[in-house]
Length: 113
Length: 117
Image (cartoon, rainbow over all chains, first blue to last red; front, side):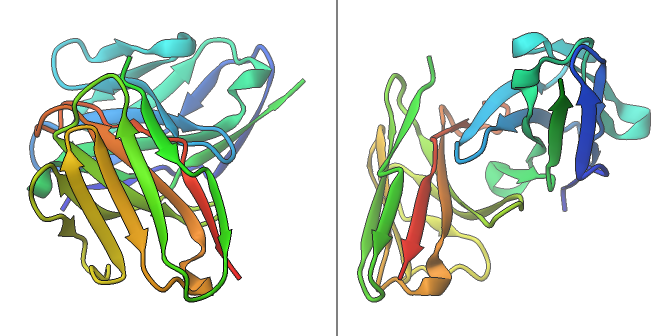
């Protein structure tokens, strides 16, 4: 069965600082990996996705993520965080029976001004 | 592109009422739509997968008679919470995907906050 672990429940960074959100997955084949962001009371917005090819993927809002098969990781990064980046971030893995997405438990990002 | 509209955004109703939530893909045809439930400060729990023109596939533990799903067209899926009770209060989110393959990303609606009194 596929699964996703986001080890950090909460992360606080200062505006302008760099950010890395961790994501580890478990999946038997090459996974389809996604990062989504959710603002309070809203749905989820797709930041970026990985299917194959270049292991460093670029997304919207200046985010990027790197797929590392040897570590079963897909960490999200941003060089300089903006106050508007404060939100909940979800990592997800797709594939498997029914082509469903499995979400991690999310990381709440707070940005200090 | 890839806009998903969910309506209503907030519902408050009495216990025993049935509530219908609509999920529309505005600028693409969605072969598959998904319905999730999210409890406060928790992740999304998949309730069911809805394919146009066929019966929905429900996840284990989700009552199909309680949560009726209809996917009558390629742009509309509805979730009806029948005879809702306070324990059904939650945030319900739909998503839509173009195609059957999971390498196509899901695009999410803004969710519906359901409060049962």
